[in-house]
Amino acid sequence: KEFGFKSMLGRFDGQSMNKNERIEYDVCDDAYIAGLYVDGLSGKTALYLIEDEEEGPLGAAVWGGDKPCLLADMDKSELTDIVNKLLASEKTDVIMFDIKEKLHLLDVSYNGHIWDAHVMAYLLNPVKDSYTAVDIAGDYLGRQIAEYKELFGKNSIYKSFAEERERYIDYVMEELRVLKDSYDVLVNNLKETGMYELYTDIEMPLIFVLYGLEKEGIG
Image 1 (tube, rainbow, N blue to C red):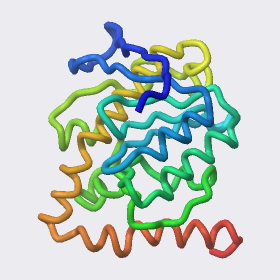
Image 2: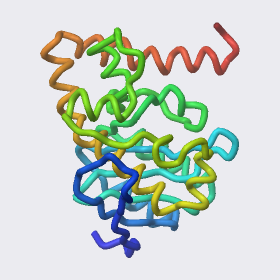
Image 3: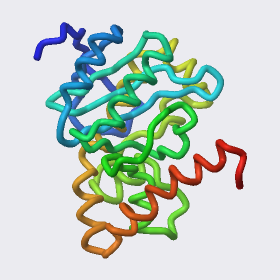
Image 4: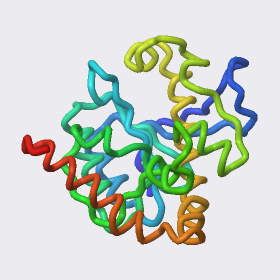
């Protein structure tokens, strides 16, 4: 389908350690069109929710087809509605980073189609002290990518998003690619190590149960 998205070519500058090909992506700032786009997704989809600690959700990067798409510059409630719709869909398996830290923004229940790369990597190697995109790229994809602080120092996400939009989105798209490419690798590793059912039947449902209790003031 043609949604009339603007197209951007991601460009990393010399500060990046990434050696991968540049990522071309579409941009959508219209909630209605973004909703149609999400409705049309099926299969495996990577999701990166862009959030600033003080300003809240700023956008979302989604990769569910041949090319990723940036959803941005729309009302925050419209943005979260679109993300909720994606996560609630049973047509697509959505992989993202550390959903536990994003649940306060969302209104979604666990449906067996939400995958968390952070939790998956933890189960596969619980003695590590971090499970970031940089870690997962190196450990499971043999890929080296730049950390946020290497590119933007101590800048807030909002500052980077507002003042260095193109460069910041290049960074987001690289992390999004890690999500997309690591999905099968992480799932296969969980199955090979006998951790798959632990992940699907206990770890992921528990995240949602505990958040629900916390939200109700229990625990």
